[in-house]
Image (cartoon, rainbow, N blue to C red; front, side, top):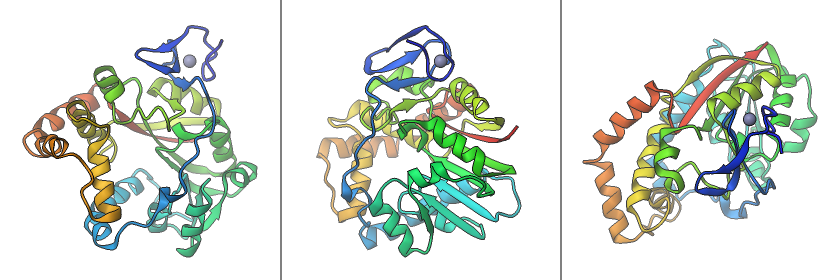
Length: 297
Ligand SMILES: [Zn+2]
């Protein structure tokens, strides 16, 4: 067997997580069963109005940070791949916006917001859309063939356009320490887990040059760290995520009382620990998630 990213032959199972193969050269991990994940149709169920108003400022802050990764002053076209319900791309400062999305239900929601939509297959066939920015926010790891999507991005970016890719980092302190409790592991949903080294190789293969990597990754790194610590102390996986989601969608708390206490600790007294680990992981480039900005070579 050879590594699909770097062609190396030193392949092993990924430590305790037997669902994945792991390249010992570039660090990429991929699911032994590499097949499309099917999402429940209610995945994009509309959030309850009171709760969505509550979380809106935080989401808007994250979306603002996302748009700051682009250094271009003006955007003609911004394409967001894996756009979901289009909440992010609808708010970007661009004349034209396209949301690429595999889920039909999500595409319908985007259409209602007036966003131009493309299914995965039609995006892969496109060329010459001349986008200023193409972004992938924690999407690449869900795709059966991420290379195809990056090649399509290359064809559809302007000469000076920017590619922004945010992914979890398998070569992180978090995976090393938390293993199965690592928030971003998601072995059912994540078909791939990249390391900075492997994604650099993949992007170069697809014609890109790396401009910068942000290991601080405010949206996904400290939040993933927080949830990983909570996972370690909780009776069920991702209880904070479930807590937030249940409040967002139904307005009710659907998590055990002991788990609510664990959540409360990490959200209050535990926060300085999260903060310190976040800074150390970022400075040592071992963060649980990172954002890479690339341009055409
Ligand atoms: Zn490799």
